[in-house]
Each structure stands twice: as structure tokens, then as C-alpha cells.
Length: 124
Ligand code: SF4
Ligand code: SF4
Image (cartoon, rainbow, N blue to C red; front, top):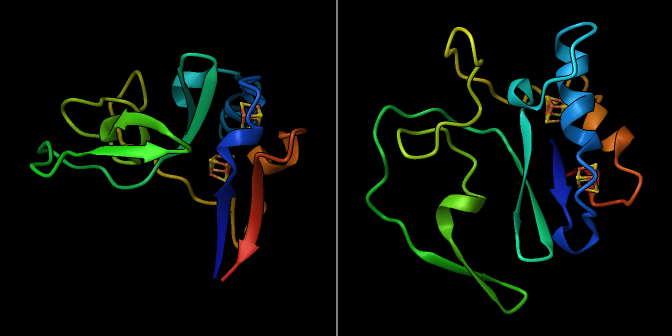
């Protein structure tokens, strides 16, 4: 099964992945708010997150995670859209967005546009 592997250390914050995702799903429109991948930042580091499940309820198991010595509120790296992280929703309709790997077989445009190699398609 294919999945997109994220190497946070290689992300430059260029946000080309957000542009590619929105363009590949809505012809002629570059709008990060319609993208199924969003790039968050903390200090001088960037953290791409790919849209996963939608939930009406906020979770009750929030923890702090450590990535390469940096501590994060887990919300930043969580893939879900929920009441306290209202990303990955169509801005007009509110319809949840979820990564579809750009088709079947997977042809992820975000991976193609990521020049730094932070995103790679792998088979598991
Ligand atoms: S295209 Fe790659 S390097 Fe640029 S923000 Fe997205 S994941 Fe990071
Ligand atoms: S694989 Fe396709 S749908 Fe998923 S985040 Fe990348 S560009 Fe968007």
C-alpha cells in the first residue's frame, strides 16, 4: 500500500505542495485553504501535515510529542480536522477534505512539486 512519507528536516516551507494540491483538485485555483496538505511552522522549522480523518468531537488524549528534540502540542502534527483544529475543510461549504493520493494508482502532486525531497511516495 502506498503512503506519503514526510521528512520534516528537509521541509523548506516553500508551500509548493499546498499549491499543487489545490490546483490538482480544482482546475485553475491555487488556494492553500483548499489543500489537503498544510504546512505549519514553529520557530524556524516547518511541518507538513496531510489531511486524514474528520471528527465532530475534539479528542481527549492530547499529548506533547517530541520531534528531533523539539516539543510540540500534538494538535500541530495531528492529521484530523476537529472543532479545535478546523483545517482540511472546504472554505465555502465546510465539506471535509481528505488526501486521496491524487487518484488510483497514487499520483501525488505534492510529492512531484516538493523539490527538497521532504515528501516521498513509498510502498509498504
Ligand atoms: S513542497 Fe516540500 S519543502 Fe515545500 S513546504 Fe511542501 S513539504 Fe515543505
Ligand atoms: S497526495 Fe494529492 S491529495 Fe494528497 S496531499 Fe498530496 S496533492 Fe493533496
